[in-house]
Length: 311
Image (tube, rainbow, N blue to C red):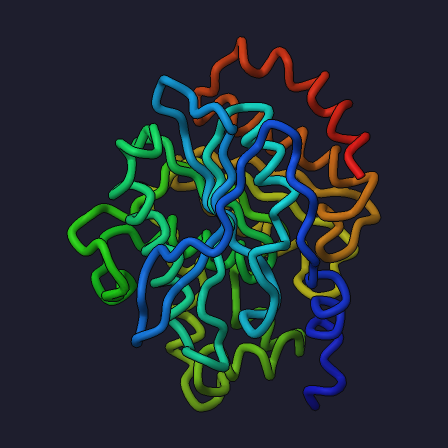
């Protein structure tokens, strides 16, 4: 399929570019911290935390933006990162990973893993519980988060961007309209040029790397809990990919939850009124599997109401 006819790529470009969102009251943000250095260039992230750092070690969430692996930035999840810091005391890290035209696979995955290692390396100063690190991604960010969950301990995917010797394992993943079967995308003619750049080859030239980079092909019984969310009218990535991922995870005894949102298209979760609906579902999953402070959560409904007034 001609790249100009690739509907999936066009849909992603229309829905996954974001400006900086205002930070909630009571939340401090440190922008453009350097969490690693890859090929002599710094890797940047924005860190969101309550202005008053919790005394007890708290969990962290690493956010990975979408954008066909070729574009997008850490602003995509700044709204969610800020609110989770406010309502639950979570330390949120919104990451810029290397895009595929700068460095192809597995560079972006290595950057995501480096961000996790950075968090663990600074656990004491950040008041972080290093046994409760989640990863949340949308679209290509969900693809990377799924791979991070499936490739723990594989040296080729760790990279050498910093903090070697520290675990990059994650304790749960939330995956929003992710690409989990790249071979299926080829068959549907979606993201063809984007995958060619990301994987440095077409499927015809190197089918094995398309399988290697497909999270669906890499599921194993030691993976952490997974929550999959997808719109059933996604024209970029079929919701059937999330269904297939969920079914395979469950078959192997891994805790997996799936929610299909009726009538919703790609990246629906970042737009009102769906933003609150989706974040409420994600919060419920995080509360249960990150063992969030229930007393802290009791105030979140009021905080959510206050948040809706932020301009």
